[in-house]
Image (cartoon, helix red, strand yellow):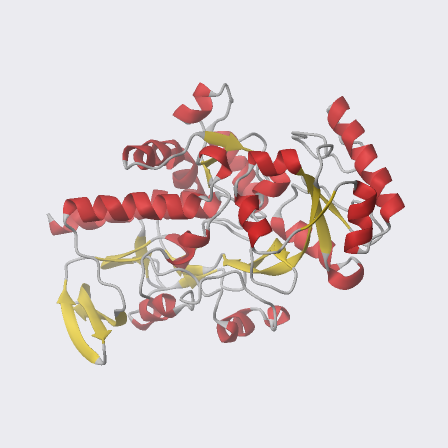
Length: 410
């Protein structure tokens, strides 16, 4: 690709971490153990225990490390599948991915590290059963880069329709939220040198993608208090359930889609919404009844639904679906709606690694000098990834991989 960042450029919601300096400043009580339990539950206990322990225990250090590199992470909010406010994000709810990519890329530039874009790695090189470098193709010419260690951070396969179909035929024809570069070649390169894979059939859909587009609507919209309604104007799910549960519930509604409903106060608290408005993904009106008419749902029922939900917020208890964390009533005009439906978002499966980020072969032995981190790997997220955990994954295991690769070179 011509730029750095891959799918991280598309990460909007934030980065999960527990027992952090930021949470402590805000008076939020959390622990690595609680975070571990939420992650295992969210992943249906299919997750690799040692990887989840590493993820959750190291997460607080990842936040401090990112802040030390110039990343703005001042706010903490709710995300689906979390027991407490844990998703860290930039001021004003700005999209987290570009902020992280900019901070880390600036760090590289200031250190004088060379980055090569528009360069395709075509082979991993081996000598005496150890990694010895990579073969690269640029402008039709191939050359070799010799190295004692290689870190693979090339993402999953969410934009490769053939691989999706191969591993989960039920998802054939689904749209994707992924960067066009996320096509799984990194996984195949590692398999070619004997690397094992795990959980390849575990593919996640994201429930709030603007209907019939690839525009992801961040989970933070629901975390800030938006509700989901169907064409009858009724809620049908706890909006902060895990992504697989919400996706399934949406597909069961008339038309296979639903509507996110929120107000101006939610928009004021989450600047990412400004982008959805400017792209024309939202509908708006000065009353809930008018909004219902604009989007073609039962407007009388919608008015009742919003009224009932506002009562739940005032009383601090969702008597209908048991949603925890009811941040605000939906009262401030204008009111907004976005039609949403599921699309392929994340591939939980990938290359098998240990908690040192070392790539393992089919016998569970490490391939000397080969490391992997992020969505190219499997095992961290199990059967379902919790929103905000992908960014934690790339930072925690990216850092582990980099540190261990550096030890080999030294």
